Image (cartoon, rainbow, N blue to C red; front, side, top):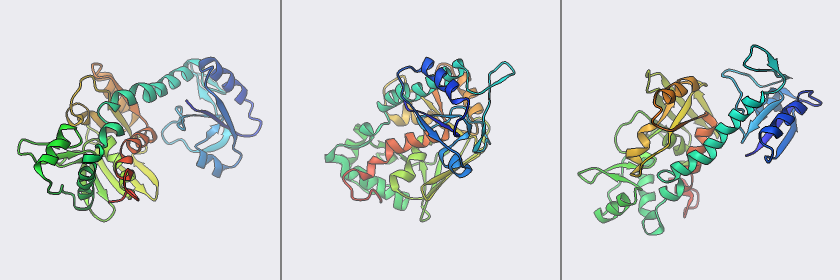
Length: 307
């Protein structure tokens, strides 16, 4: 876990934050960066001094909060403010990050991670040809039946009863709630929110993701432009349900990886479904998850990773 403290020069509250961090995470290294200009604060993600980044994410950032080099005060939950999050607040934030890093990825790796999504060399060429066909035409290509069956058996694609491709992670062969408009005009569907977020880095192209909150239908849009992303609404988050049974990702995982209009709405869904272990990911965490899973699929054994 990377702990990074951003602060203006001689910020009086850095020592308090460091002291509390050492009590909560005594073995985690802490790095410091002095930020004295508004432009640098915006680039680094500092929302006042001091700001704590946990693996690059500010766990205490509020929706609509703007970067700043001014003094930052944290509500302590008792109607007062302090110069650093309380020990309990820090412990909760770090625990949530550890859940995201150490509980979620291993559980998802059984059905989603790259080492399960990338076919072995004998089948990889066919898998990548299918992905490129979806990216360039929006449709799967014709393939020998025995190749399709082998890819289906390994859960690299899914076939319906007529042996047609209905999923080639991250693409869906049938309409879903997650539509992705790729640069060049091709429109495709993603199996889930994480798959949608993985498409632009996998293909190396700009794209617009259009989805909706499953609880109230509120539209959610994610724009990928020139290596930067914009979420609308900016409060949107992603819920990832950890699989508790084995099976194809399309059946046990993809239907439960959704965009929500806010972290509050996402957490409310999690709270209402206690039988399904889940983690609420911030926009940055969800983007990173999608990128780490899918970016290697077309870069492995290819020169540039583009279709």
